[in-house]
Image (cartoon, rainbow, N blue to C red; front, side, top):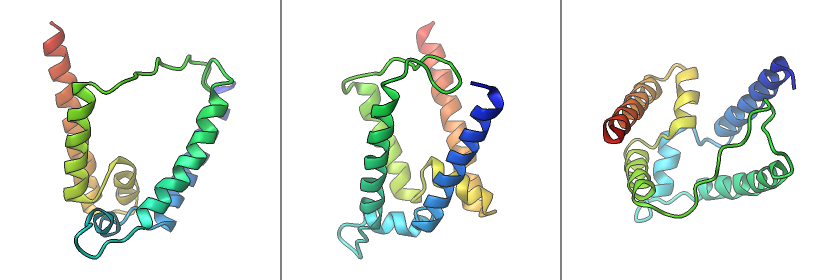
Length: 142
């Protein structure tokens, strides 16, 4: 498939995803934190967004199994299966950050696009954290 078409499809998917985050109010950290606050004023909205996303993603992933390569022609990476220490620790770190900030990577991009400084700070800190893990992995593999 031509590179321009792949870029166009990627842009459309990003626009749909970002629009969905804004329409569902999932770019608002307070909405996310209210979902995580089971003992307080709990808001189930995120649960319904996740259920809808899982339904759509399940259909898409199952359809992608019919193909050997992605839209760009690159082979799909192998699927990691099972729960290991790295997944468990990473999940806990992600959960703590998500609970404290009420932001995860996609809403951070939306918040940056809206000019909200907390999204910029979160995104930069996320990139720094990713670089630290990459550097740590390189040190461990030596």
